[in-house]
Image (cartoon, rainbow over all chains, first blue to last red; front, side):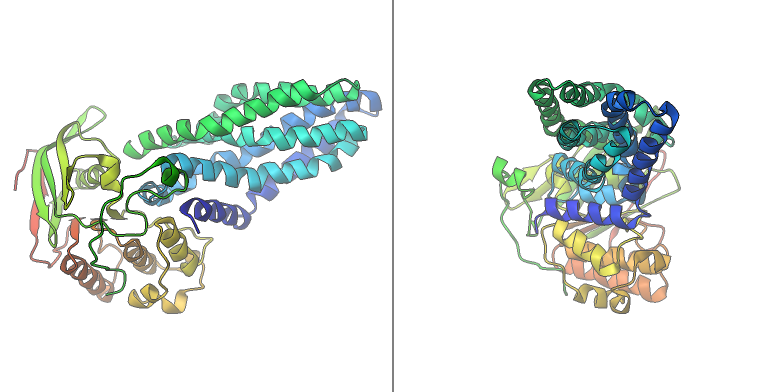
Length: 222
Length: 238
């Protein structure tokens, strides 16, 4: 097995065994999605209209719950030193961790979204677009989150600062993701919104490992 | 001794393809080095000058003990050699059959690291930890390493149930699994009982005998007939 796959699988295994951070994210996502219709009331049209934005924001906040541990655990227990000395470049280490975070958090959130869309009376075509937008866009959440997680690595309360760093950077994801769902509701073309979302996600996944690796290097030296 | 392959291997130049595959120089092999030389190293942390003028040379098959009071910079020196910390001044030069290099990243790929923290995950079992690091370092895990460090019976036990000494033994097994030429050990005897300390001494002796280099920050004698570098507030030279 390659060092990349080894690290990816270990992080997925850790996510599955460490008190269920993925389960926590899913529970949070489900709770927010359940509470929102209770607060808004029984206006089905309004619920469908706000579904895209609400579920996208809830998904990002849920993913944030486990993002601060992306490098922190390995940094605190000394594993990151050993990983940094391995043949795996730090850029690929960051990519493996982004992949593991998406597979253990972003993908389950995406899979749960059609069920929660029912609570918002979202029509089937718009639900499909919501699913696709989350599938395409959540890797960007993990990738941008990796930059924030690496920047806050040596801070004691880094988890509190992390949302302040990455939420503004994720605004394009919310705009295009929720926008695609709104367009689908209005039976308009969603290709442009999904295309821009995919482009943003692609760029984030491609570039963020370099930024995260540079930041991890600085923290290992500090 | 298992995990101490003395074979001298050639040095490969990394290329983009190997980089993408997570496979660069040193992957799956043990690059031997002739010597490690430090020239007038200066370490600055924040606005504090931790040490300055530190020079030494350690040849293959030899060990260097780094002593000093708390805060004298022992760990900082080890982290500098590993390439985590850049020296404020001075050079670290690795010599091998191909020539010499002061590239920190290249040097890091030769390092077997045993730090203050054990780098073990409480959720993973002993054998999972060993397999993880062996595969990460491009090696096949050798379960006999667990016997060697006295953890064969605990192989399927999650690390959260290990004592501090057992965790240290597992970290030693991981060090052996990496088969790196330059061992950097931070307090290698910490948390170990007498038998554990004897084991560390044996492993270190075996590593030196196989042509490796050891630099250990320690308050205890290494017992390897090694030289000692004492870090203090003034500059030191061996």
